[in-house]
Image (cartoon, rainbow, N blue to C red):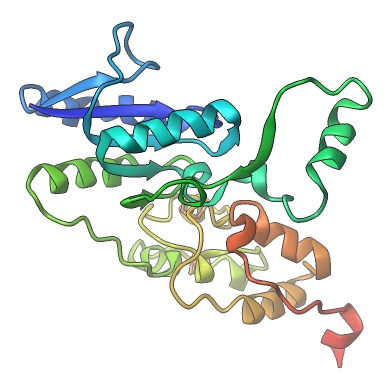
Length: 256
Ligand code: SF4
Ligand code: SF4
């Protein structure tokens, strides 16, 4: 029996809920897989050795760090699930804009709580990670595919092609042509482009595709009226520090 654990650090538990949403597939795994640790889903949990440990959330507290290091020691394969665990998540989007002390003071004023917190970090800054399944939340089909691959001794493979690819396969009309900012050209696909199918620009919740051309996309945003710092912040929400330093472009510069 393959022992699987699901651990949550700092996050919204949305990715763990996505695992629970895989009911059909999980039923088919009964007899091959034992969820020996999944506190969100069951009362009885043993924190022993794992064949596969899925970890959701960013490392933001001392407890997160301790749990993760202990989990890594006990897991043959460790998989980061969701954008918080892969890149730091939305809670890390302003990590480089202020010190931790300044951020705590801005939120809590002088009555800041006496808890030991860190700037939210992805798992890979603390331990070695074997596979990453980004997304906010992660895509449940990719979770099932990963489990099935690992159970059968096959390396899961996730080509880092842009969301535009899946958007085109779905025959969606390009939102950029209709003046709606979209991050599809620079975002890692695998979700099936559900947002653009609904007329909502991709927010890049799965992080960067390979060879993203941010500068060119910023030029397009500028023409659509999304400019300067606002445009960079739009790109930064889910990417945190995986967004490279971009050249500041003023309105006048663009007009030239
Ligand atoms: S709508 Fe977005 S994801 Fe779809 S083709 Fe246009 S830019 Fe790409
Ligand atoms: S289309 Fe973009 S924002 Fe929507 S799920 Fe896919 S990567 Fe995330």
